[in-house]
Amino acid sequence: MELTYEISPHLGRAVIVARGTGAFEDFLAAMHALTTDSAFSTELDILADLRDIDYTPAVRDIRLFAKRFGHLRALFGRRAVFIVKDRQQLKLGRFAALVAKAMDFELGVFEDVQRATAWLDPKEESNMMALKTKIIDKLAQPQLAALATVTQDGKPWVRYVMIRTDPDLTIRFATVRGTRKVEQIAGNPDVHLLAGVTTLAEAESWVQIQGLAEISDAAEERHNHWNEGLRAYFDGPDDPNYVVCLVRPTRIEFMQMSAMKPEVWVSQTIEKG
Image 1 (cartoon, rainbow, N blue to C red):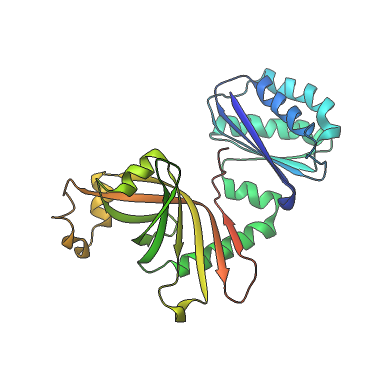
Image 2: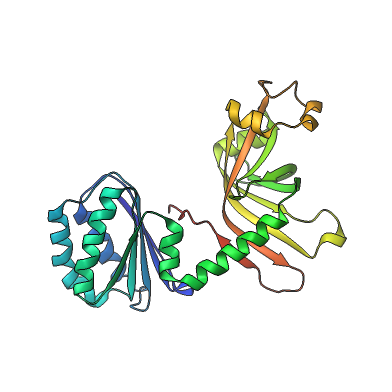
């Protein structure tokens, strides 16, 4: 089992991400490592994303949790929330929550990231949703955006692309299979987009987008994204040279000319290390 954690004092939170296979002892060891990190504080909440582990705890593990939790309780923060992937994990997690409650500690267990985040901080979730709405409004229409990729020798490369944004903030644009951007994304999926302004008169606000890109030649993606404006470059949606790039944002900064600092939206799918 691979376990990583990140401590974010500005958010009042420490995040643990678990992947792969392993034993419950591995998870408890990671929790102990977190609480003994010099940057950790008992003022922090703990959010543990367990959706990518191939493991379902047994009742004996809950008993082990209770035993170890008694030793770690004094080091833990105010609250913790677990995000799990299925009903079996949810059921056993809620049993663990009862154990924690008996020791005067709040433990939430959810399958949904948004519910978990709202449980920790309802106000933060409300603010994040309001910001997401503003970003969606800004990107509602197809528009030109500057796309930055990383070359094979680690240098930035920028070009314009015509993007379309879905309500879940997935960004798509069409491209030719053999282009440099396709090759660069295959080597490094980290990309950056700048969008929201095409003239100086529109420079009231704009967005800076960090995300992970992938190239798709799936028939469904190509047909759904197709529009007749692409006819100048491709024979049709089944042209073998036509592919669609999908960018899934991990962080978006909503910038305003009147403000010195951006409003920051972070993906509800927790960044995996």
